[in-house]
Length: 163
Image (cartoon, rainbow, N blue to C red):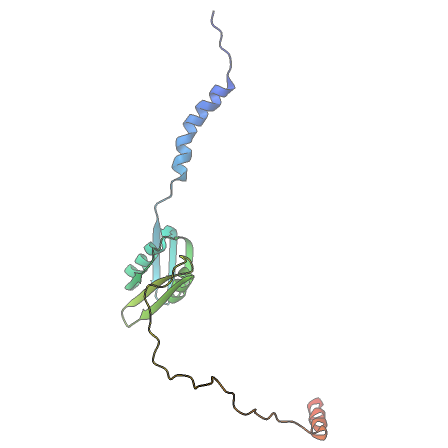
């Protein structure tokens, strides 16, 4: 006669084998998406696991926006954002060095890297030709006199103020 014993460890391991694929499937990221609606003055962005580059591409489709970058824009964007396009760009690109150029029918964004990447800008802007400071540095002008009141005038002003 054979006897069957209850083995709780065997049931737990069977359960774990069945549950493992479900847990692994739940951990894989969902499809990334960035939906943009509205106008340039009133934008609504809904992003789910979208990279910053995908968000800028969605802005490009919706608002004729072009962007150039010297760094990878791989940061994940999640959530709902609303406001003007310029405000959203400023918020999303916070920590990067960037310039926004607008014209009648096009918006151009140049992203140079920045604090997030620990990089220095690749492009360089030349400073305009300014006159040299005078030899010896800055010299302040004469002191500006401060108007003062006599005791009698101050007393009159005080009495007038309390009326």
